[in-house]
Structure formats: structure tokens, C-alpha cells
Image (cartoon, rainbow, N blue to C red; front, side, top):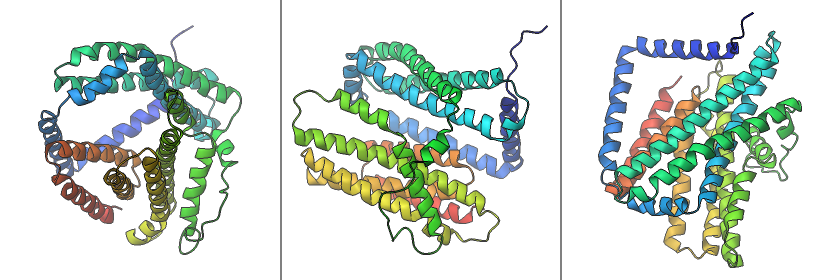
Length: 384
């Protein structure tokens, strides 16, 4: 009798769908060549800009982190726990409530699938941390003070956090917990917002708001807030402490709100794919809540920074960055509304390019940002 481990057929589905997507892209040779050349140029630009960075500035922070191993372990393990648990819960929910749930699949194969996905995520996170640390070390003179200790810490902190995240995902699955249904029990907002709940396609904005409230009340960022609170030094002035906590809560809420809005935009685009709808109408319907989120996070974060004694210029810069980031993320989601993973990748690349430009030639950043925004907006209008 064979004792070989049988993988869940979901892996074959992912492999086939990925292969089909790659073949479909390669069949459009002109487009594939253009994208390939664009990525080469972008990577060359980043490599050129990176060599002008002063790696010892972030190196000071990393050196301080290396001297506090418990803090480094908490950050790395906490991140791995959050990512692995979320992926494990989502995968178990898909395999249990999706169309695979009707197939005669052994429970052991579901467990094996979550183990493998968790292990791959842990490996990817470790390689990502290693790549970031290595890139900074290339442009730092005193990299030997922090590189090896942080790599060693990551080597056992990330697997530890991933294992705990997998255990929590398994525990939720054994308890029969439908996290999506549980979260939506908390999804009724406390206050009505007439500006969001009126007009054409107002249901999309309401949906975005309910999704955000659901995830927030279900503890979508509670671990991050608790981590920051545990790291605040004793004796901190109450105004500074209040400002710090308010700022952390604001940023965490904005991240949850933008992710919820993105998921709702993607779902709305799929539901209305057969309906003739112009980009302007879709943007007006889907953009109400992101604008509201930017206004709320901008005002709350600005107030939090003032409580900490930040200068006016810094506060205004924060508000401008919030609006710029929300606008760029919204346009990218509209453009890649049927492929949200591309939107996240494009946003990360755009942020990296803008950050590198800010180090090399700061006056170029606003022009480059406008160019990126207009380019993606034009591509969004051409997307189908």
C-alpha cells in the first residue's frame, strides 16, 4: 500500500490556471515584449537609484533592532503569524465552502494543503527579509553590525510565527468557524452617512463601508495596535502617548479600509462585467468611500501628529502623502479590477520608484507621481 502523501487537487488547479495565464500572455507577443522591456528598464532605474542611497541611515534603525532581539522577534514573528493565519483561514474557507467542498476530498489533504501554503509563505517572507537586508547592506558601510544578527533572528522568528499562525488557522477550522460569516455579524455601522448612501450605485459605497467595519470590529489590526502599545516606553507624556496610539490606529484603520474597498471594487467589477458601464460611472460609485477614508485618516493622523508636537510642514506632508497614496491605489485597482494581484504589485513598484526618486532628485517626485497617475488612469479607461 502506497504511503506517499497525496496533494490536494487545488494545487493542480493553481498550476493549470497559472500555466494558462502565462501562455495567454505569451501569445500576445508584442504586449509581452513591451512589458518585459518595461520591467527591465524599471529594474535598471531602481538599481541605478539604489546605489546613491545612504544605507547607514536605515542601518542605524536596524542596528538598534539587532540590539533588541525580543523586539525583532516580536515584529518578525507577529508579521509571519498574521500573514500565515489569514492565508490559512482563507484557504480552508475556500476548500470547505467553495466548489471543492462538494468533492470527496480527505480531511488530511486539506490539512496538508494549509501546511504547505504556510511553509511556502514562511519561506517567501524569509527570502523577502533577506533580500531587503541584503539590498540595504550593499549601500551601507557598517552592515556587519546588524546583518548577521537580524538574518539569524529571522531564520527562527518567521517559522515560529508561521507555525503559530497555522495552528490558529487550524483551530478556527476545527471549531467550524466561518470567519467571513462571523465578521459580518459585526458589520452594521454605528452612524449613517447620507453622502455615501445616496445616488446612483450607492450600494457599492455602503458595501465598502460595511466590509471595512466588519473586518475592523473582527480584529483586523488588533495585533498591530497591541504590539505598538507594548513597545511604548514607560513615563511617556500622555499627550505624546495619545498621539502615538491615535496615529497607529489611524494608519491601521486606513489599511483595512483600503483593502476592503479594493476587494469590493473587484467583486463589483466581476458582478457587473456583463453590464455596459463607463469608467467614470464606476469610478464615482467606487471612489466615494476611499475619498471618505482619505479625509478621515488625513484629519485623524494630522491631529495625532500635532499631539506629538510635529511641525506644521510635517503634518501637511503627511496629509498630502495619504491623499496621493489613496488616489494612486484607487486608480491601480480600477485598472486591474479583474487582476487585483497586479494592482498590489504595481502599487508597490510605484512606491519604490517614488521613494528612490525622492532620495536622488526630490523635485522630480511630484512630476513623476502625476505621470504615473495619468498613465494608469488612461490604461484604466482602456481596460475591459
